[in-house]
Image (cartoon, rainbow, N blue to C red; front, top):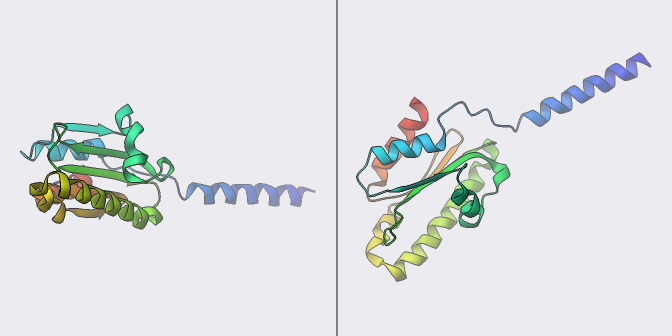
Length: 163
């Protein structure tokens, strides 16, 4: 009987350890901190930032990106609220690196939606979409639509690794 109890306890402990493997261990900067670094490091006109704890983000995240809440432990968006500009930087921190490919695909879908919108609405902004980037830094995945997406990428990578 003691052997059965011991085996049961060991099996339960192993299941708990396996279940914990997919959890977040993010010790890096928050997505908000990274986006604040971008906002401070550019003059591109980004004026609105929402992150995971903001109702506006919670209300729109899954609809805009198709990434489910259970995949991320942090996220944020930086854009120009006044409209008319394609500017958008979205970043998520994934709980599991196995979801990186899916997140990249969802950001590519978002980019395509923005391309379709702006090609008919404001074609002079399409070059930003043509030069957009989807980058991965650890468990962070970011969509960068900006005047100088290369400079934004540098800021994001530096902020994600140096904080």
